[in-house]
Amino acid sequence: MNKVVYRINYYSRRFDDEFVNLLSLKEFPEPSEIAKIAEEMAAFQGEEYAVMTQDIFGVDLFSQNPALKKKLEKYARNSAKLISKQSTATKKTVAEIVAKGFEEGKLTTAIAGDIAKATGVDATKAEVWARDQLAKVATGITKEIQTGLGISTYIWSTSGDSEVRTSHEVLEGMICSWDDPSVYKEDHRQSWQPRSLIGAVELHPGEDYNCRCTAQPDVERLIYE
Image (cartoon, rainbow, N blue to C red):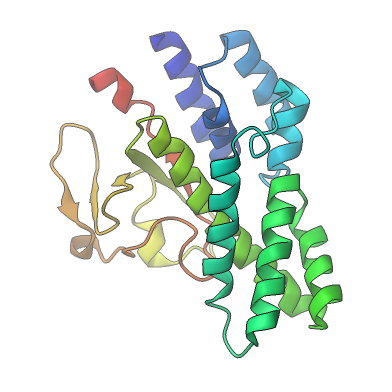
């Protein structure tokens, strides 16, 4: 078990948010399966969520879990409400497109195209909406999956480029709590510290506007329990 946990942790750090797909499984895969996933992830951009899951494991996460599908639709509706200066009908349309696209594993560009066609907004705005909405929905689903498996903490991971906000960058590699986005700690032996001490954002990855950060499953925690 520890060997599998180690491999999962290694690949999750290497391939960022893509490896959170493993949490949709009912049990940890064998190391050989993990290696296969790692190879697929080399060219995987983190957007073909449902496609990769079904292709490798034959698992359609949302059709097998109606409750999770309802939560996906709820997260999409709540996220769309944050779009400013748009009618209720437009927000509803965006929510439906994002939820359906996420479930089907569509690329961001494809979802943006659907939004532009359905709402009449220009391609640039549709792209911004798609990326922002998908990030928020992905955060909600990631939280549901991880906490559903008893994983209450995650590792903050940024995109690692010059566009990362300072308030996000300071959390890179830090342990965070799904229950309280205002705290963090550097390792499992440390007590929780207020994020305000380091000027960190008090949100989960993906919740801030156009945030590209992700929440890696804190599998190392399993070793300490």
